[in-house]
Image (cartoon, rainbow, N blue to C red; front, side, top):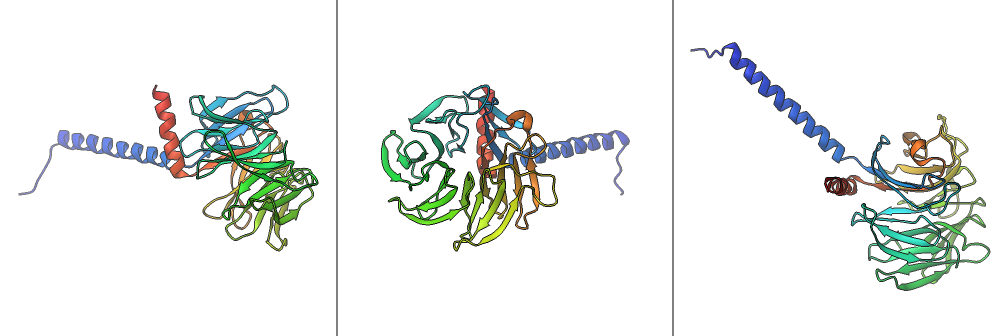
Length: 317
């Protein structure tokens, strides 16, 4: 005997099917959103803001910091910590750790700071331009080590990184140098770019990529100081004008994220280059960050998912 259903049953089944499909789609969309990476941006020049942004520029969370209505102070470094807090500064002397609700849970007073980072051992690396040294500060605020930087203006730091070998990679704006120091302060490698250099990172392949600041360029150099490639003034095959190139990061897929400050409303504040130096993504939120976004942090999908939960919990209070 053949099975048959009357119309009302078929209509009921179809309604349940439609509901199930719609529910599945909503779950998939929500899951996809949760799986996306995030950017933590920081800007002064009257904007005085820290914000968590999606790749499409939409704001997930933001916080108004201290700072002048004109000009800038602080906002030269920012880091999203593993505990969900933010390490930042909104003046030149004090590094702060803040919860997403604005509560400051740790701070350290230094001298003319442009770079800092929380290390895996819990200490905080702080580069002091005022004293020309790099400090390691513990959770209690005690300085556990101090590394002197080189002479002839090499203490006028911008970005500074701790390398995998424990050395420091330090950009000095005055002489226009990118210098690798050991913990004693000995210079083990140096590249003279001769601009008001801002940022540099050591790649997995051992080369160094430099954002030249006032040089309006990005350049990769080998350990032997040979220029591998360079992009200057404008990214080829795009309308992106390079201005004060600042922070940069290497992604797991080998792409580079490049900071582009003071570039006006028509060029992105961050852009992504693939291995062929082609632009694959742009962040241009001039209304939010204005012309003074020197620093930002990238949150991978795992970090982003944790932060999204924290933001949701904060909103639910």
